[in-house]
Amino acid sequence: MATDLEFAAGEFSAWLAAIRGAIRSGDAMDVPCGNCTACCTSSQFVHVAPDESEALARIPADLLFPAPGLPDGHVVLGYDDRGHCPMLVDARCSIYDHRPRTCRTYDCRVLVAAGFADDEDVPVEISRRATRWRFEEGDSSAGLERAAVEAAATFLAERPEALPPAAGRPSLTRLAALAIEVADLFVDDRPDAPEVRSALDARLTS
Image (cartoon, helix red, strand yellow):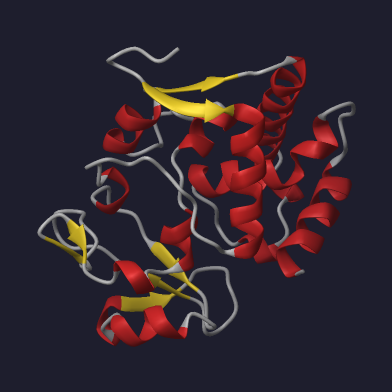
């Protein structure tokens, strides 16, 4: 049960199924953000894929730059001198209905699931929010799933050779999302780097 200083993150297994579906489909993730804009004000680059025509049409071209490590056509949206997304106007997203896929699927609870929430490389405001999430584990399977996500995240952080080229240069948030993609490999086993790379490559290009 979350306290007044914590946020209810939901039941872990249900959340895991939802975030995995959102990552794979690009559909919006239902995140109870309240008035939090930490992800929009933490000097983060936002990846925009070539097929995101609605977002690209609404973001000034001079704010977009080639995405490092990704094929031509993939770009990133930068941030202003305050570290804020330039699409954030009066503390609200000015292109919310057409925001990039990265924003639609962003969920700082992935950092908690991966064990990264209080890592020094996580932007301070995001860390402050993320460390207050509290998941419920309805049964023993939820505990096993969470342990698998953490194991996958640790593996990817320690074994960058397991990341395929399509992964780009992942932030910890992206690394956590990739860990969720392959967590099933870590439930009853400890796969090697080629096996994890092959699974990620298949899922990132499907």
